[in-house]
Image (cartoon, rainbow, N blue to C red; front, side):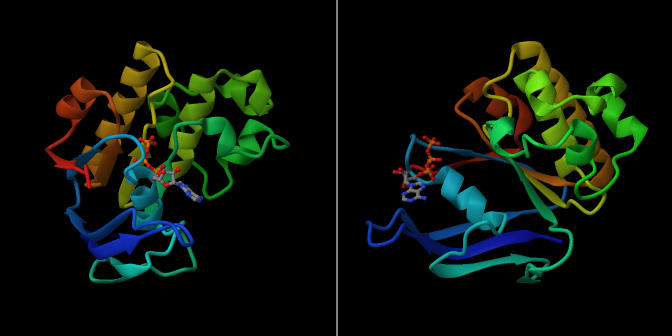
Length: 199
Ligand SMILES: Nc1ncnc2c1ncn2[C@@H]1O[C@H](COP(=O)(O)OP(=O)(O)OP(=O)(O)O)[C@@H](O)[C@H]1O
């Protein structure tokens, strides 16, 4: 059940190649960090791994086969800014239940309070909103989570709570995680190995 990128290359339109020949594989339960200077394409690579973007060269496979375009996606991505990932016209319960129905245990682990469910997104703080985005990404069929600066904007306590919850779930389910962050200590604490993406 490995997630594997082979010889990936990408550039935007007629621009220069952002990267070529990138190889990466992540095993179930493994936590892999990706580090590198700003602008080298870490976010773009994450988008390719989670099928939001198609590579111009190379392939991404899950369990040795291309990831099916239909159905629940086994690779889920959580971004830095939760407000960009949710529909501002939906109340939180609708946002939360968009893909599946998270159980009470997961909500409690992520510190999501019942009363938040009836609120609009603008009535929540960034940290509260991000807990919903994380819950939404942690469906039972999520095999890999891509955390692209997932807790960068949050205070230390919220950051610790979210990572504690995600790590617990990952251990229990053997879920793999890719962590992109500029925070070196967080990266070292979480990751089994770190890949330098300096290009
Ligand atoms: N949709 C797009 N169209 C054109 N260029 C883009 C697009 N998205 C990103 N880029 C450019 O591609 C390069 C890589 O961006 P990307 O966000 O992948 O890098 P990054 O390593 O994640 O950077 P950061 O650490 O600052 O988030 C940047 O120069 C960026 O301006």
